[in-house]
Amino acid sequence: MGLFDRLRGNDTPRVAFIGIDGLSYRAVADNPETFPTLSAIADDGEGGRIDSIVPAESSACWPTLTTGKNPGETGVYGFQDREVGSYDTYVPMGRDVQIPRVWDRATDAGLDATVMNVPVTFPPQRTVQRMVSGYLSPDLDAAAHPEELREYLTDSDYRLSVNAKLGHKQDKTAFLEHARATLDARAAAFERYVERDDWDLFVGVFTAPDRVNHFLWGDYEDRGPYRDELLSFHAALDEHIGSIREALPSDVTLVVGSTHGFRRLRHDVYCNEWLEREGWLSYADEDHDALADIDDETRAYSLVPGRFYLNVKGREPDGVVPESEYDETRAELREALESWTGPDGNPVADRVVDRETVFRGDHDAIAPDLVVLPNDGFDLKSGFRPHDGVFDSDGPRTGMHAFDDAALFVDHPDVTVEDADLLDVAPTLLRLLDVDYGRTDFDGASLV
Image (cartoon, rainbow, N blue to C red):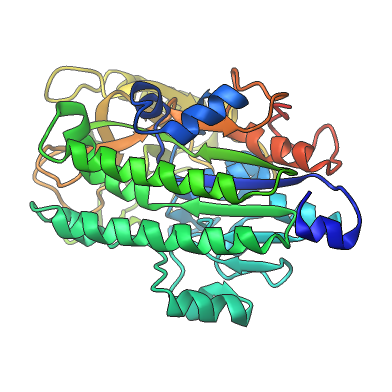
């Protein structure tokens, strides 16, 4: 029993969730010597592979993981979303998430929550015990609440994110050093507030692994010059999780989970360039660089990652596809996507998914009409700017997100990680906290 429980005189169960953006279950399973902590959690409790969501993009994944709802309910589909009834786009922030988070449900039940660095949470909520917002927050002064947390993070060289521009350099030394410093400072902050032992729910997210994997996954898969450095980085991550595990009181259940896995990237794919060349999309001028630059002959356009929209009359401002021809036109686009091949002759699409298959809820008005889940090697970009070709194999990134390679580890004997996905995490955390919820409150289900 923790100090706070002793002081308040009850034995309410508590949970610490450590999120890892981009942790590959396959990497953990293939390298147990690199991940002794996660391997031990799997042995003592449960651990396994889980599916991500469609689309498997971090900005959509974290709202789903923390709400247990699909993007049709959260209202967040990616790093860039389209305004309803407009071609204007915006970057979703915390206030754009339309569903209560797991920590909202915990605080409504009278529990205290500390939340650190979860993506898509800016600005920080004043309704929780303490919070520092995650990726896309402008700076620490604006991202952290209360003042004590803000002052500590400022004085401790805490960093909100890794500088990805360093990863574009051929020499990855400075990038790795920056990523490691970011990881270590974040771990130190997590351990500090874990040891405070004044919370019922602790949520902390490491995002540096995603950045490192984007630029070094090719070295891992192809046994390149930075393979050992990538594994050493992940070993440091596992060691930090081990330190947090040791610091937790005995009444706390530790859960470690990722939003997606990783696989080898071989081609950046510019979807709008392909649509233009195939006669689906056209622009009002030659210097186009945004969705707002399409003209009134466009039948379809794309947003990252692999989201395809028909330009429908009455839905888009200058829509040209009549509603009566929607099904026919979508079937035509689906067929074209399914027959699309890359430079190596392999299909670009593993699956093409209809909107109604994966998006349900009150906020599905901006849902894509089709989503392409790519085959290995094809990373789907929007590509509004003019490009010399549809495929680019010379980019600095060598790793891409994998839908079916996310990971979940739970230090509890009564949990089963089997046929699970991201939607199951939030109800599992609440069940471990003994917080009641309705049978239809989530799109997923508790794994306890």
